[in-house]
Length: 386
Image 1 (cartoon, rainbow, N blue to C red):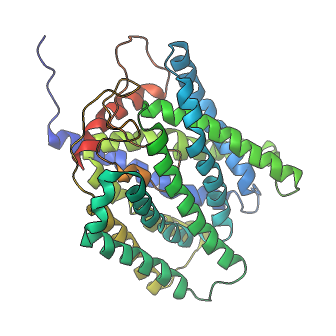
Image 2 (image 1 turned 120 degrees about the vertical axis):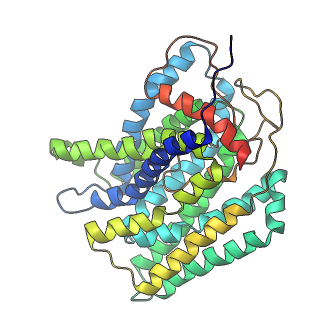
């Protein structure tokens, strides 16, 4: 049989741009959704919002996991190893949902960007292939930009951070650190598994944790899970959309973007997320950053891009992974994919490992898994091209 013609680079780029733009808009919208749910007429606290959103997303992905389990493709070892990133994800997501209730969404998103510093330091400790990053002047220049941008955002605020605002800054930074730990632990612990399956498992387990946090807060009198029951159909639709857009489908489009555009371009575009969040917050909630804060935030975003450009080009090693793909040491992507660890805003993204989905079986996967499977197959190239 003749080899199937490969798409041209121009075709891949033209197909990838709408995907990465959708991903960017999706992730930029999440702090806005969280803030919206606190507005009068909505009254949904962040803990209940997390419980509902992750519950909806888990329900969307459950058919795919049941399908994999029925085929014997849901290893018990994956369920055990996923516990570490899930723990980071639950705590980090709790802080992440809390933050926009203390800070305006744009301000929060810019400060949150400090996570990239901790991602790179963690990658240095865990993955030998990343250690060349710290020998690059671009890494240190980028770090200086991220730190200067974060400090400038705080320093140039209309009033010095105090009270709830100071707590909000600390929460934003803490959530960034926790998400860095999440991304690194995903790569270290479950990087050798099929990434779509790993994503589905982590989503299910995180949903259990988020519902548990919600229940604990309800018991403490700090949350009310029944709030959406009294909402209009339109409000419920917005809640479901926030789960679908921010968790269930945006990660599929992210994988597909990586496969068509490569890691560098995809992550470079994603760095615009806090800018779009700030613009959206201005239009919807009248959040106003001072010009010096805008400048500081831009410096921080550019610093993150410079840091990412310092990643070494490492050729992917061969070998068989546990789930039918190629793998290096069995603990993460062959090319040391820092980009996935840096995935912003919504943290339920498994590391792009370069492991394709096993396509030997002919049984069709349930939606949304069919789209995700093709996305991950394309991501193998992206993980090696950065």
